[in-house]
Amino acid sequence: MKKLIRITTVPLSLEKLLEDQGQFFRRYYTITYISSQKERLKKVAEQQGVEHFPLDLTRKITPLKDLKALYRLFRFLQEHRPEIVHTHTPKAGIVGMLAAFLARVPLRIHTVAGLPLMEAKGMKKIILRFVERLTYRCATNVFSNSKGLQVYILEQRLTDAQKMTLIGQGSSNGIDTSHFQPQDKHSKTIQSLRATLGINKEDFLFCFVGRLVSDKGINELVVAFSQVHKHYPNTKLLLVGPEEADLDPLKLSTRNTIQTHPNIITTGFQNDIRPYLTMADAFVFPSYREGFPNVVLQAGAMEVPCIVSDINGCNEIITNGETGRIVPPKDAQVLQMAMEEFVQQPELIKQFANTNRQQILAKFERKVFWHNLLHQYQSLEKKLS
Image (cartoon, one colour):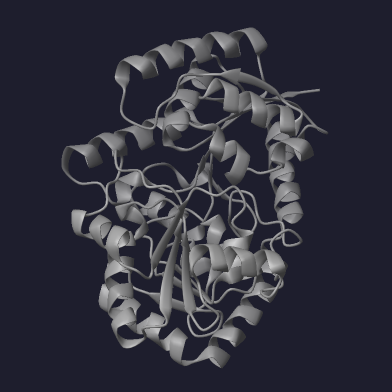
């Protein structure tokens, strides 16, 4: 069988963002997962039944480490001679595509699922722009996981239109709608979890799932919720995800509010987010930039009414006024108004949720995405033969 290499910066991306792709594609290819964190990578690879190769990659700018990783990967590719190398995430993209180019791998594919340069400024933006252009130049094909991201890349002249492809309707993996489906809010498990977290029966619960960083709009979310709570004391905010203070820290005032506000609850990272989405009356995702956010698909598939920011990916899943509410990014006041509307109009948001799940079923079912991606691989292989 032909060889397919999948590379991400950290194994969490293989585990969550590309969940179960390995099990599907191993029917057609001999697959090797490459990422950092040796033990966790091994565990993910074993779960998917694929081979693995640990590589010391970091999400920060680390030139010496990156050069060492580039050399190790180049030697690996030279030895194994795969037909396809497919990278995800920025650092894996530049290291993986450059190594694959030097090793003369026939098909070099990079998926763009978010661009840090969109929010960067000054010298950092210049460096990130250079890295993206070099990544795309080394690639034979660039997959965008959202229409909006594709438009941005082409408008910024980061690569040629001939290289760009959007798989299906967008996303990096689609969604398993049988796994993420409405669940019983009144089950003993959910009621026990609510009690543990101090969430009462009469509380209206807003939920956010993701990294607790500035780019996810957490500063604005905390400000907006603080005002909502003044008008509606029975509201609570549940923040599910890890804080990454070293990469994109929150404002000090935001961190203080999260720690001291009696109605803001944090859980840290959770392997299974479904119980937390099941508890929620509304899902809020005020991110500044995304590729195609899986968590919005997951919340929508579970019939949780959604408020999202007007950015690519989010505005391709949610239709304002039909399947949810779309608000401008970085605007705490408008976000507050949308959150208060959700508290005031339970019947409206129930309608949003029902319509949203139906659209997700039609457009973003995971197995359909996998077959679309397989078709892309096979079509590109035929062009080379």
